Length: 184
Image 1 (tube, rainbow, N blue to C red):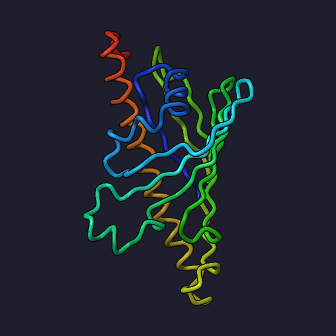
Image 2 (cartoon, rainbow, N blue to C red):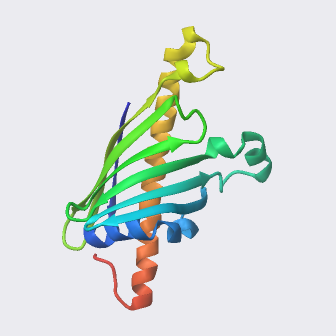
Image 3 (cartoon, rainbow, N blue to C red):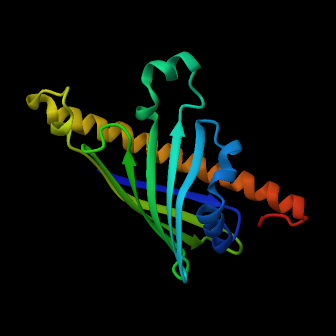
Protein backbone atom coordinates (compact mmCIF):
# COMPACT_ATOMS: atom_id res chain seq x y z
CA UNK A 1 0.00 0.00 0.00
CA UNK A 2 1.25 3.44 -0.87
CA UNK A 3 2.52 5.64 1.95
CA UNK A 4 2.20 9.38 1.28
CA UNK A 5 2.41 12.32 3.62
CA UNK A 6 3.23 15.99 3.16
CA UNK A 7 3.94 18.55 5.81
CA UNK A 8 4.71 22.24 5.55
CA UNK A 9 7.25 23.63 7.98
CA UNK A 10 7.97 27.39 8.21
CA UNK A 11 11.75 26.99 8.21
CA UNK A 12 14.33 26.56 5.41
CA UNK A 13 14.82 23.04 3.98
CA UNK A 14 18.48 22.74 5.02
CA UNK A 15 17.60 23.59 8.63
CA UNK A 16 14.66 21.18 8.74
CA UNK A 17 16.74 18.42 7.12
CA UNK A 18 19.61 18.89 9.60
CA UNK A 19 17.25 18.90 12.59
CA UNK A 20 15.58 15.66 11.45
CA UNK A 21 18.92 14.00 10.81
CA UNK A 22 20.84 15.28 13.83
CA UNK A 23 18.40 16.32 16.55
CA UNK A 24 15.49 13.86 16.49
CA UNK A 25 15.81 12.83 20.18
CA UNK A 26 15.40 16.52 21.15
CA UNK A 27 11.90 16.39 19.62
CA UNK A 28 10.64 13.99 22.29
CA UNK A 29 8.96 16.76 24.39
CA UNK A 30 7.00 17.80 21.28
CA UNK A 31 5.68 14.32 20.47
CA UNK A 32 3.20 13.27 23.18
CA UNK A 33 2.54 9.83 21.69
CA UNK A 34 6.26 8.92 21.69
CA UNK A 35 7.85 7.59 24.88
CA UNK A 36 11.45 7.38 23.67
CA UNK A 37 13.72 8.13 20.72
CA UNK A 38 17.25 6.72 20.85
CA UNK A 39 19.94 6.97 18.18
CA UNK A 40 21.75 3.63 18.48
CA UNK A 41 24.18 4.03 15.58
CA UNK A 42 25.48 6.82 13.36
CA UNK A 43 27.99 6.73 10.52
CA UNK A 44 29.14 9.76 8.53
CA UNK A 45 30.75 9.59 5.06
CA UNK A 46 31.03 13.05 3.56
CA UNK A 47 27.51 14.34 2.87
CA UNK A 48 25.97 10.94 3.66
CA UNK A 49 24.89 10.06 7.20
CA UNK A 50 23.44 6.73 8.23
CA UNK A 51 21.38 6.60 11.42
CA UNK A 52 19.72 3.78 13.30
CA UNK A 53 16.99 5.08 15.61
CA UNK A 54 14.86 3.10 18.07
CA UNK A 55 11.38 4.49 18.71
CA UNK A 56 8.83 3.56 21.36
CA UNK A 57 5.29 4.93 21.20
CA UNK A 58 2.38 4.69 23.60
CA UNK A 59 3.11 7.86 25.53
CA UNK A 60 -0.52 8.85 25.11
CA UNK A 61 -1.83 5.46 26.36
CA UNK A 62 -2.71 4.73 29.98
CA UNK A 63 0.01 2.74 31.78
CA UNK A 64 -2.25 -0.30 32.30
CA UNK A 65 -3.01 -0.45 28.57
CA UNK A 66 0.69 -0.22 27.68
CA UNK A 67 1.31 -3.17 30.02
CA UNK A 68 -1.38 -5.26 28.33
CA UNK A 69 -0.27 -4.43 24.77
CA UNK A 70 3.42 -4.94 25.51
CA UNK A 71 6.41 -2.95 24.30
CA UNK A 72 7.07 -4.85 21.06
CA UNK A 73 3.77 -3.73 19.53
CA UNK A 74 4.68 -0.11 20.21
CA UNK A 75 8.34 -0.16 19.17
CA UNK A 76 10.24 -0.01 15.90
CA UNK A 77 13.68 0.72 14.52
CA UNK A 78 14.32 3.12 11.65
CA UNK A 79 17.34 2.62 9.38
CA UNK A 80 17.95 5.87 7.51
CA UNK A 81 20.45 7.12 4.95
CA UNK A 82 20.56 10.91 4.77
CA UNK A 83 21.87 12.59 1.60
CA UNK A 84 22.98 16.13 2.50
CA UNK A 85 23.65 17.12 -1.10
CA UNK A 86 20.07 16.18 -2.10
CA UNK A 87 18.23 17.08 1.12
CA UNK A 88 16.67 13.61 0.97
CA UNK A 89 16.49 10.58 3.22
CA UNK A 90 15.84 6.94 2.33
CA UNK A 91 14.57 4.90 5.26
CA UNK A 92 13.10 1.59 6.21
CA UNK A 93 11.30 0.67 9.37
CA UNK A 94 11.59 -2.63 11.16
CA UNK A 95 8.66 -3.28 13.49
CA UNK A 96 9.59 -5.09 16.71
CA UNK A 97 6.38 -7.11 16.42
CA UNK A 98 5.56 -9.10 13.29
CA UNK A 99 9.00 -8.23 11.91
CA UNK A 100 8.91 -10.81 9.10
CA UNK A 101 5.40 -9.82 8.04
CA UNK A 102 5.74 -6.03 7.77
CA UNK A 103 7.85 -4.14 5.22
CA UNK A 104 7.96 -0.34 5.19
CA UNK A 105 10.35 1.76 3.05
CA UNK A 106 10.18 5.40 2.01
CA UNK A 107 12.00 8.48 0.81
CA UNK A 108 11.68 11.87 2.48
CA UNK A 109 12.46 14.96 0.44
CA UNK A 110 12.92 18.40 1.98
CA UNK A 111 11.76 20.79 -0.74
CA UNK A 112 11.63 24.57 -0.86
CA UNK A 113 8.03 25.74 -0.37
CA UNK A 114 8.50 29.47 -0.72
CA UNK A 115 11.16 31.66 0.85
CA UNK A 116 12.46 30.09 4.06
CA UNK A 117 9.82 27.34 4.06
CA UNK A 118 9.92 23.57 3.61
CA UNK A 119 7.61 21.02 2.09
CA UNK A 120 8.49 17.69 3.67
CA UNK A 121 7.36 15.12 1.13
CA UNK A 122 7.23 11.47 2.24
CA UNK A 123 6.66 8.75 -0.35
CA UNK A 124 6.93 5.05 0.23
CA UNK A 125 5.26 1.70 0.56
CA UNK A 126 4.03 -0.44 3.42
CA UNK A 127 3.27 -4.11 2.88
CA UNK A 128 1.92 -6.70 5.31
CA UNK A 129 2.22 -10.39 4.49
CA UNK A 130 -0.23 -11.80 7.04
CA UNK A 131 0.71 -15.35 6.00
CA UNK A 132 3.84 -14.76 8.11
CA UNK A 133 1.79 -14.06 11.26
CA UNK A 134 1.32 -17.34 13.11
CA UNK A 135 -2.09 -16.51 14.60
CA UNK A 136 -3.67 -15.66 11.22
CA UNK A 137 -5.37 -18.55 9.36
CA UNK A 138 -4.28 -18.79 5.73
CA UNK A 139 -7.75 -18.18 4.32
CA UNK A 140 -7.90 -14.83 6.20
CA UNK A 141 -4.34 -13.70 5.39
CA UNK A 142 -5.31 -11.44 2.48
CA UNK A 143 -8.07 -9.67 4.37
CA UNK A 144 -6.02 -9.32 7.56
CA UNK A 145 -2.98 -8.10 5.62
CA UNK A 146 -4.96 -5.42 3.76
CA UNK A 147 -6.67 -4.29 7.00
CA UNK A 148 -3.32 -4.05 8.78
CA UNK A 149 -1.81 -2.13 5.85
CA UNK A 150 -4.69 0.34 5.85
CA UNK A 151 -4.51 0.88 9.60
CA UNK A 152 -0.70 1.17 9.70
CA UNK A 153 -0.48 3.52 6.71
CA UNK A 154 -3.07 5.82 8.31
CA UNK A 155 -1.26 5.72 11.64
CA UNK A 156 2.17 6.30 10.10
CA UNK A 157 0.90 9.17 7.93
CA UNK A 158 -0.73 10.79 10.95
CA UNK A 159 2.39 10.30 13.09
CA UNK A 160 4.68 11.71 10.38
CA UNK A 161 2.56 14.85 10.14
CA UNK A 162 2.55 15.16 13.96
CA UNK A 163 6.33 14.74 13.94
CA UNK A 164 6.61 17.57 11.42
CA UNK A 165 4.37 19.74 13.62
CA UNK A 166 6.54 18.90 16.63
CA UNK A 167 9.61 19.74 14.60
CA UNK A 168 8.15 23.13 13.67
CA UNK A 169 7.46 23.88 17.36
CA UNK A 170 10.96 22.72 18.33
CA UNK A 171 12.62 24.86 15.65
CA UNK A 172 10.40 27.82 16.56
CA UNK A 173 11.43 27.65 20.21
CA UNK A 174 15.06 27.09 19.28
CA UNK A 175 15.02 30.05 16.93
CA UNK A 176 13.13 32.37 19.30
CA UNK A 177 15.65 31.62 22.05
CA UNK A 178 18.29 32.74 19.52
CA UNK A 179 16.19 35.84 18.69
CA UNK A 180 15.27 34.90 15.09
CA UNK A 181 11.65 34.57 13.86
CA UNK A 182 10.40 31.84 11.48
CA UNK A 183 9.41 32.66 7.91
CA UNK A 184 5.91 34.25 7.59
